[in-house]
Length: 101
Image (cartoon, rainbow, N blue to C red; front, side):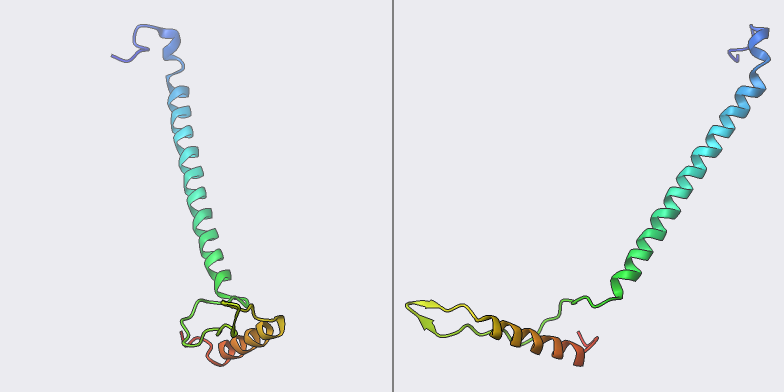
């Protein structure tokens, strides 16, 4: 027995209550679908931008920076010019072997 069966005043609002129920369900569904679509769009956009640009991708290479000679029992730190030269060498290798990793 519906809750409005004994009350004629409430029976007048049955159609309105049912309409509001379906409207709420429809709006919640629309918001959910829109949020899902936005999430998928943002994920694909981020994946597309991650592949473009000048980003270093990890690649296994056989050459490492060799530390300098041992001084007083410790390896010396490389100078800035040695670091820059090694970085230039690695960038040159990366550009010549683009996509080979």
